[in-house]
Length: 266
Length: 370
Image (cartoon, rainbow over all chains, first blue to last red; front, side, top):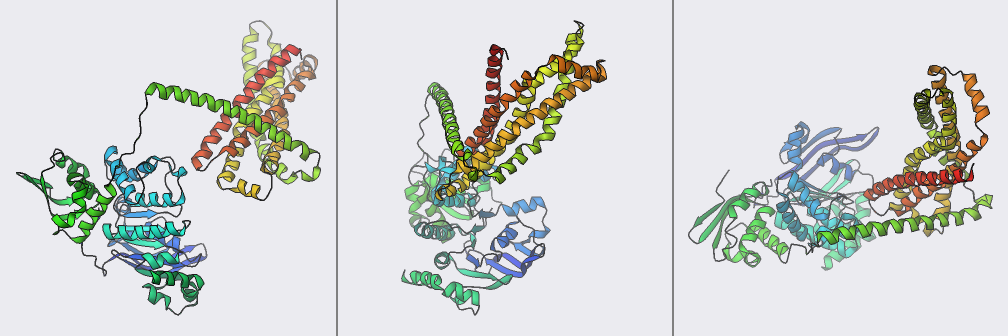
């Protein structure tokens, strides 16, 4: 389970990616990519379409085996682990998939309770009680807890998926485009939710996004994926000053400026 | 690992150790009995580890209000742990149990029966409505050859007709052989083995050829139609067509119906032939009936009416199967689970309808003396 240490030491890293190479046939997606995620931070990962943001996420989570390179998570190198050890590490991850990926045959409460029953070995009643607390934590009512995923709106699906990702109190939360498809109000509320939960629960967040407002509102650091590696990873201000065509276009284009100025006004 | 989570001294209870999910069951047990003693003094010593599950237990013990005022009475805890308990207390404010009235079991059963009956009635009405819709679209399209979608129709003929030929041949061949064996065994007692030929011919021309082909297509093609249209429906492709002002019935359903109207009679014919061949094989190999005798009897005893009676049913079956498959596809709503449910329903319905219509047709033809 999570070591909920009180000192949020920013120098301690929970994920360390070194020299990652990912290939699909002849197509090289990552070539010698390095990235660090510090404990307790929210790292936004941005990049144009096809720069391999989701592939990076899938490599770290273990859904894709990297062609080359090392990924160290919480002090252990993933490539050296056998299946049982791997599963123990996986339990310390919480993943929110882009479409929510809620199990459609279960209602929300059962969705969140599933990992609690399977991994933590809780009795069904206890697991469902904790599941309702988790759902309430992300702002879903106990009535919604009995609904099935297909009857929910996009925003509610994202919230429920977040509650499920948080079920086992993960140390690292992976979010794949969490605000895509949400209206601006819902997206802003989601950014805020992730921040408050991070402050209360102390996990680290690996956040893949296209949303400039999310970068402004929630992220401590921003990593830019470009030219098959991490071009720069730093605070938003410093990243925005990087001398690169894509970065300039992205952060200082019309939408980037609008997002930056709206966050200044706050 | 510290085992002592809860220690009691007089009226005060002190909590310490690892309050995490992995110890949840034991922690809960350690706390039983204390929850009702409201005047108990709870003091939180240092926690080695604390997560949401542990925090939830603590909030349960001390109550939401006290937990929210945690800064006042447990200020010595690290700030992150205080924040966690406070956040969980906020989440646990208000009722967590959804109000679900559990109705009487008998009423529940009656309601379920009623629901099913109503569903059945509704389903039949929908089917009739859809049949009407398809026919109403079919007629204007038929008289305007420009609107025939030949490519799509031919593609569906290939998928549902041509590709099904091997399985239809195999199945009817084997059933033909079985019927011949069975007939020979029974007829031998009456010294009428030779009538096996009539048995095979009658049963395959009138019933089995078309029925077996139809049941195979109901399983093979109705399910495919439902899954195809269902996936399109859940992907909003059908809405996209409608938004362009295009008619999904004309574009999607008619080519499938036309393809089935062509495929099934041909497959039924293939099935009849193959069943006869199966019967002939058994007759020549184990019943001492020569092939010449078989053909002779076939020509002499069996009139072409039987063949026509059998084949006449094929277009009706084809239409019913295609329409049910497409209708169930259109009924898909939302998830992948719904696609599965409707695919099952389309196969069950179309097989049921095929057999029902076949029974009615048998009665009708018998009364007519055909």
